[in-house]
Length: 621
View 1: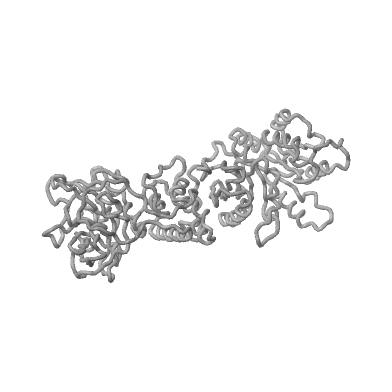
View 2: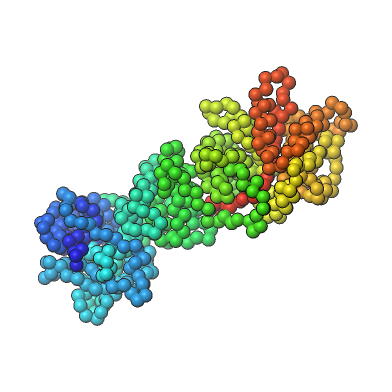
């Protein structure tokens, strides 16, 4: 074989095994081959000679504990000096299997074969045994069987010489011509750097290396540890009996369940994706590598990195995780669970906004905790910037920080829109007046167009369908019609109002805020009528007493101003126009407050804000 130069013979005391060169200074072999490395020197020589015998030391291994059935039988040797030989090349993990089966070769050093010899085998199936090994069976009934001296040998494709695994075990009985192989995707769990070298369909070596380094940095910040990288102990022979114990998850410091590797994996694959593997994950990298090598969805890994970013406090690392796989650019795939509406509107106005969506919902774990999720849209593509369960007093700072980061996801020419999805009891909250940041006291509503939406209505399929119908009608009209609900209308029947508004209301203006029960009932009627646009003053008369339509009623004056300023304005432009009104009101230096100083706008267009739930999960789980 022309590639035989990178095949290696490993001597450790009285034990002999095989290995293979993967970088100019690193060789892989089985941990049991170098089990006595603490007391006996390790020496490496190569099949075609020329380098002599090179001393080496064990720098990492997969956690093998010396038992026949123990997984993680991998050791990484570092040579005392670099060698001039070309390292092994790797095949895609799936290349080891086929119909008809692929012929596989192993180059080992059994007794009386100091120069090495070949054994021909094939993989029985692509099914992993105990989540760790692939079974090998002899290619023919005769020829060289696996024996002591083959442990650690690279298993290669006969036609290309590329590596698909490593011999780790052979049958005790010479009559049974089979063994086991540690496939490359499993080896990379134990030595993350190997993942950079193994081809994967969707990401190249620099992208995988960058992800690995980012995940290692995240592990350090979180104070966690991955697989153990200590020298093995205990004495073993060269080829050991077939192991059968399930894979053990390496020890690590406990993480909160929201950002354990297992939780992040489930978020990345979604509810319909591949289930969590039974062995779990020993580190963030092992979860990411499983996504890269064994999950067919190419976007799952980037979703994993994005989801992890939400739990990283370091701003630069968080941004780097979100921008992976392209540094300095933003990959914005359509989420796995996003579905375009079956009947999109013919008008293009629905896509003129690039919203930043802030959803605040009860977490389900108590009255004081909320699930906050911030997303950015480009056209119909949604990218989750952050999602966290938080106590009430941390909602505002978290949301503001993630809103600021979400602007990185928008195209330079995008028309930004900040949309808060709030529980119904919070719709009158002063989100437009939140200070934009710790360094900027200006209101958030003066920074960009800002609207609110009702959480319950956004989750209702029936009301979203009615809203789409309403917007089809609105798109055909030059201006939206305002339905007034003055102070003296507070006592009207809620059901009758719902039906009337459902028939012919484009937008509803309230003269009073939804603070008193009587006003909240009419507010709820408007929401249930699928009115696309609602406006009201956040403060002022509570509407608890009828004022008999006096000429100086502040609520009536407010509605008069709305009618005056909203005449001949198309509904899809209302967020921008209300933004300009807020800028004027916030900057007003008059003694009397500007009439629009507390103007609230509920505006919801389902086509502009489709609702793919990228990381929906039970927040209590």
